[in-house]
Image (spheres, rainbow, N blue to C red):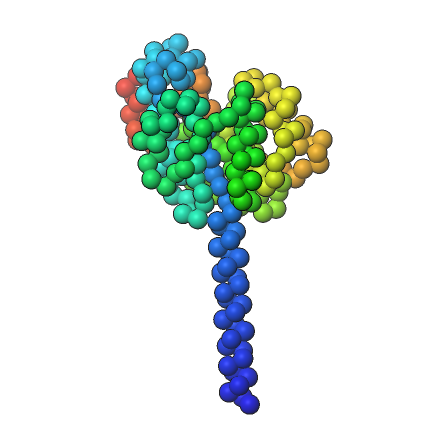
Length: 245
């Protein structure tokens, strides 16, 4: 009788471990992270920064930001589906070469940033992801820790947002599509983050905020970022020193 009871308990324990591991695996596999980016072509990226640094240097800086972002993403769990979402159809080969293995490459669809974000969320959620986070590619302080925190926070929040000092945001995530967050937004202005928060309040959504980071669009942004305390990628610091900002 005792041996039978021991065997029964052992089977139950084994089944519980299997169920627990299964659900943990399913949870990990249900997360997706997308990087919104452009191919780093001179004259096509960081045009406001290029007014001070020139087209070539602005593109070089943007390329370094992409490298820094992808390096941090490379530290995330392998169970997270990772996407590069790019803008120009003719740049697919360049983007695939930059991304390397481990990333799915997709084309952004829609007129304007709001529609492209909305469509990206819709597509990935429809593909089965339960938590989706989209990040910018020009915020050099975006870390693996912040992205991991963003994905984890969606367990208890409807939306997660990472604000920028310029009034925009570098990260947004959700568990289901809330299209209202992308309509009626003054894209490219200092009101983007606040208008998005207002939209979440109208929908009574639970929002988790992340640290404020510097989104570098101008020489002033670059100077501000270079003076912020904290670790910076050596390649980016070498760039700052080289341009004698």
